Amino acid sequence: MIFAPSRRAFIATGAALVLGATARADDAPVVVGSKLDVEGGIIGAMILQTLAAAGIPTVNRLLLGPTAILRQAILASAVDLYPEYTGNAAFFFNRDGEAVWKDAAAGYRLAADLDKAKNDLIWLPPAPADNTWVIAVPGAVAAAHGLKTLVDFARWVGQGGVKLAASAEFVESAAGLPAFESTYGFRLTATALLVLSGGDTSATIKAAASAISGVNAAMAYSTDGALAALGLIALVDDRHAQPVYAPAAVVRGPVLDRRPAIAGLLRPVFAGLDLPTLRRLNERVAVEGEDASLVAADYLKSHSNG
Image (cartoon, rainbow, N blue to C red; front, side, top):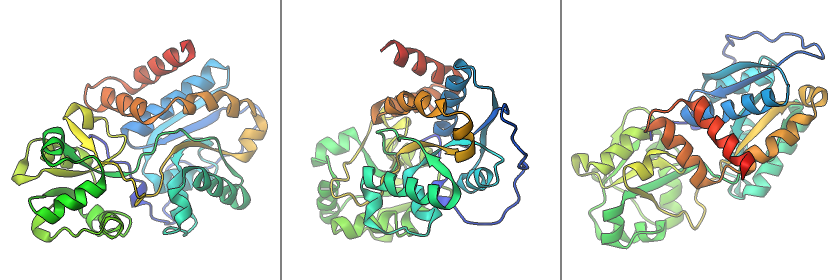
């Protein structure tokens, strides 16, 4: 995909924030942030526009940085509200590897409970989409080998001929390729991998779509906008090797206490963000070059009319 969400690169450091926390008056604007990626920019713009339409003053801090920066910003009260992913709470609280994160509802509840108790951060109801790691293949390859799920992929690996483009993080992280391999019982050798620097899925998807260096499969994210544009199919993780990464708005408790309407305003916005919708929104920005704010406005307009 054209963007590479940085959630897997989260590191709990004490890095200084470029924004300083300031005291909030009762009528202070809500500082809205987002991560430095296409999807974060789109959802962040939806939040800003929704609050503005309701007469709630805001400060735009979209595309602020990677996960670590946004997490520290909200903990330091430098950001009041931003879109996060439920599965990231596993890393925030050093509980990665637990099965609960593979259940959308249970993972959300645990994330909400942990952050409320420790940090007075409120996780609002998440979107139904799941932006997790997937393995994708060109449509023609899927048809030729009968590939729909990762069970099918494991069979194909056993037959030989697979070459997967992926980042070093995906190949080496226990939550990436090793999780797929152990869950589905296959093993990709070094010769079956094209490891690319960085975590940008746009490069891996392009390699598979163009058969660069013999690549016929790619690491991707499930909401990648370029999948459909380049004719790739995300194989179904039917045994749930991956945690669920559902987008959800996270807001500081004092801010929500001061402006309780925020929860009701954002609920329908996130409820409409299913997987096909989010892929299409990402595609409009990442592939077709549209402005994220305009794409967000179109979504909000069509959603309110629907």
